[in-house]
Length: 327
Ligand code: ATP
Image (cartoon, rainbow, N blue to C red; front, side, top):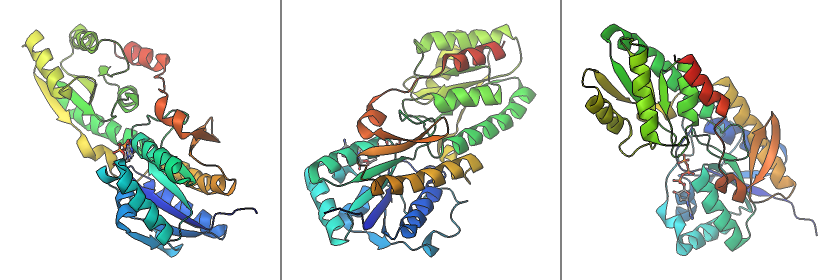
């Protein structure tokens, strides 16, 4: 007998990212369009464990496409990492009549989803919702473009004050283990250097950055530091800078959670809308344990195992571009 999904549960998990709301809206409306009921699960996997689940109507997702954050709230849920927690989650899912899940989050969210799907034979489709753009198999993740623009705006503002005071500004940028935000923001904002984890020897990168500041003998420079490129982040780099060149007047700016907020860009809203609809289509096509992504402007399905495990490359030409353009 042919099986058709009748009730989808949707949740947002891990760090929030701009346009998660646009994705929730798209999932909800695409499901309703296809005659499928939608249940909103609050606070990620925690809501599944606590039974914090409510039906979403088309009206519930009105007026949210322009809002940052997530109306479903998000959480990091330790209990879901153990089998007892996942059993509770499964029982609540059954109780709510949910027969498939759409999870919006990053690699941790997909790792949990994969485990859950294996244990309980649940159809799950993932949407890449993270500012870090660190998932393999998709050119972009939901929220990445907005975050990149936010970082660029912040650096533009810092530039004004840096040039007025003849200083070296070290700006710490998010990204978990990936340098996409840092390198692309460096190019977009015309930074003098960027320090990212993907390139060999962070110390060499720091030396290079110091040299760059000196070579220009410009009074000010802006160096972006990926948060985990070195233990201690931008503060640690500042220490190395000052020891090597006490004549430098360094200042550290940690952009922090500013990078996650704000109204999503058009690009992110469109991406989230397309991927949200595609996730529902994927479930109707009986796809499971896959992430829906975008490649060369086409929708693609990527197995969770690949999206999580494989490393996405930093393009060499971008790395070179930053160096050429900062002479
Ligand atoms: P971001 O990239 O924004 O940090 P993320 O999805 O990677 O998002 P995590 O906190 O790593 O964020 O993961 C989100 C949630 O997924 C965790 O709080 C936990 O509930 C679940 N999770 C992560 N790893 C596992 C795992 N190995 N087994 C079961 N569940 C997991």
